[in-house]
Length: 66
Image (cartoon, rainbow, N blue to C red):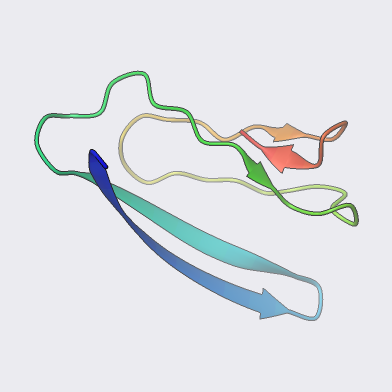
């Protein structure tokens, strides 16, 4: 695998939060996409990113973050 994945997850009464960290093993990761299924009960998502210049988009028809 060309990267290491670290994750944290917390669940509350009104939703939850998670953090994903991708660490390349050798060179920088270019054109990398992640899609996460949130479950049939998901109705929205508030997304933010700290580094890397990427964006998260909630896709309601598929209940996913992309």
